[in-house]
Length: 128
Image (cartoon, rainbow, N blue to C red; front, side):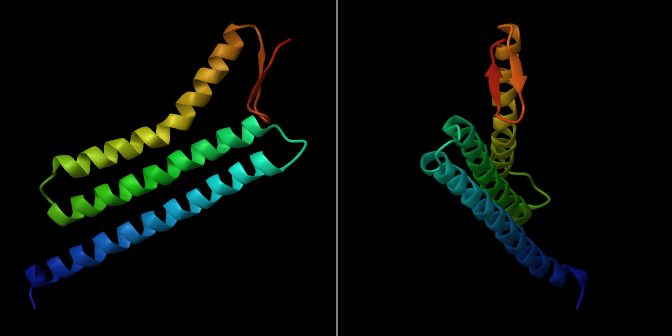
């Protein structure tokens, strides 16, 4: 068989493998988000805001994984042509990955501008 006959089979396998890996990654992040939210609600003696913030970040990563997986699935399907849908899904995934980091940066910046000190362990501002 020639290479042209192998290309559709390779694309078919590659797109399903990529999608499966990103769905598995999304499920792992979703499990982490549910676990952290459960700790925030049920664990006495801990600050629930920290755990909810961690859960929200992992939820963003779960949706980003799904977005990347679907974007790459669509991109592999139409390769070498790029489609707007696949590019939009990949950009959405990148924005979802950056969301928790931008949120933490804004919280830290507001804390330091107000004259406090940022505690990295608890993800909170300590007013000195």
